[in-house]
Length: 362
Image: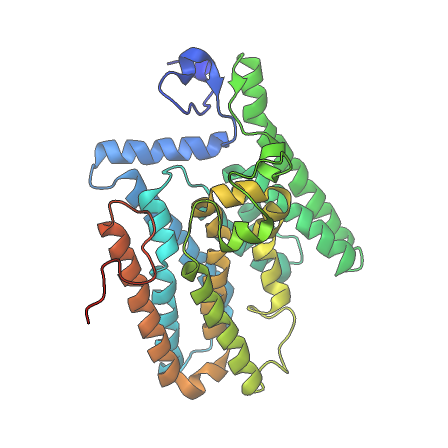
């Protein structure tokens, strides 16, 4: 099929092309990337699209975390901190939401690739003060994979520039440039679909926002996070959130937060941009978040779990009670692996339940 006829668009059903109905919400670059994964699967069947995509996304995520923490590890670390960091990385690596989402839901999940670009862009944003080639490479990659995500990131940058950086001209120019690029890339498949005469199968912005009044999939933005329409279990969010809160409490107890710089990796200010895309998507399109938690969670769970790793890597205070933290992480790694294994065995469910499905004896 010549590309001038299909325009590198997405078709949601086998007869959608014949009906001239196109889904123009994926960027062309991302679709070409997915085509590359398909070609890899055809050449080497053992590397299915799900597996190769998951491996690439996880490697990219770990690479982004490494960029964030490497300066703190450059001068060496003792064996206790090294063990803690290794355990934290294994905890991130075994994130059940990541593997379940990629294993049992959409193959076309661009969100898991947006997260590492978002984390890297956020770190470089502060390090290079909204400039420099590394920042722009990372930001452009995010734009190419999901223009809407980079547009929201640019919007958050603009807000930070106006509120937190006293209208810093460099931040404002960078934010506006990124938003302009994102809008161009977002409109490209839409305009191609129009030019080729395809009708749109995109859901409307009114529907995604929940302002259509439909209560079948969405009640309020709190439910979108805690109890979405597609029932992602509460513990997938609660466990990493509780661990992060425990880290904060421990640092307070050890008086480690008193000397913390606002620009230090792991500080609230440095991590805020990493959560910005999810928060703005939740603000603008909470119904979409409620319907597709297995997609949007990558931009919530990913930052949460990455923050945990960054804290262990950049704060020496955790080495004071390293054995206790190692036990905590060991139990949580086992918990993660258990949930992944249960999800793989459960043919009638997507996410495993918190407890046993069978009755208890006695």
